[in-house]
Image (cartoon, rainbow, N blue to C red; front, side):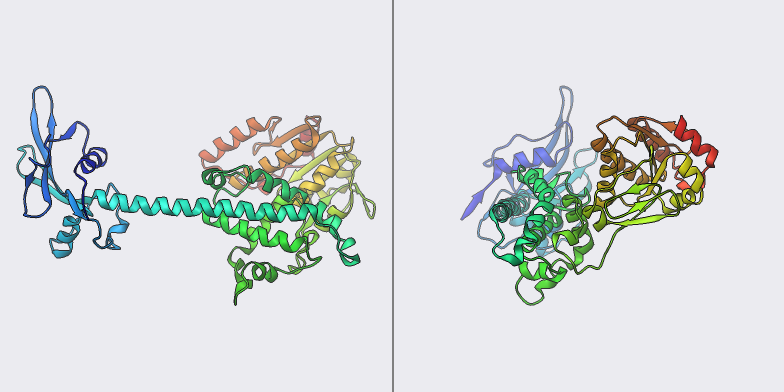
Length: 456
């Protein structure tokens, strides 16, 4: 079947090929000059004003072609609409031109006759083909997202009605369902994204994650939840094997292991062992110095102590300290611990987040802020991009738990204090724009400085 695209080709040229002020010399197909016995035609490009008329170029295009002709060459699929390519004048190039995949562009000098540049451009047919590939891929992804949402909804519907089947599950299933509540809340929010673009830009994911990686993670999460509510304990390999039952299925998610487990823990606000994943052998320590009390333990101002993430989720902690000091680096914590009398006399509790705010850190901070003892929170991180991110996350946790009843302070590299995060964020952005990056340890200060920061 022969397809005639003359009018569509003109619209394509006007949108993507012509420069400002240019137009195609008004002709119809019946008057367009044929340069072969086939379907190639010359289209003249002109620039016309009230006083001037000048030919600026010419295009050789195929205005009709056999719809059943072969697919474009792989080389052509790499072309973009703005590309100006140099091609050999051989049979391949002529075939692509005759079949409408490309067009030949001449650009004239001021005399309107002499060619200044000759190049090949994407033709309408190639543009339509590539657009069709994009549209088909988009439709497939839309279906995939719809099916994935429904599969996860089905998993959550089963979860909500799941009850202990026998005595072996009655001891752990109720607690497991409670631990997974936060994860379900995040999924419920994601399910509101009916459009793929909304899902692809959702802030629940790291901004650097591609759409494909987000899809793979959601499949991973489906398998994770399926195991979490059916087995008291499972290991990493079981997640992949339950999703992909063929040979090698257990390795399905291996390339994303750390990223996926980190995001699950963030969404669940819960250590992974409490969701049943017990094969990692990982325990996250939370280092601190100062007074902390729980049901099973009691700490006073002294050396550096450590609570595990599991302990934080199994116990409720409080403090008698009036000032909670949150530091990014462990070196700051050990320096405070060496000043034991200062920590005790100042009513200070210092917690180190070790360069990464984990869900256990956030939970402990929230627990401590539930009491009435803490009157102020001081946040001290490195003066670089990562430090600003950690400071932002710490600020969100504190504000969410304290409901603005607590004074907050942020320490600047010149030992000044800011009391509004917006001011601190602006200060940090200006510092980074000027290329100034500094670690906490380099501006540690003395007990005199620390006292000034606490009392100001």
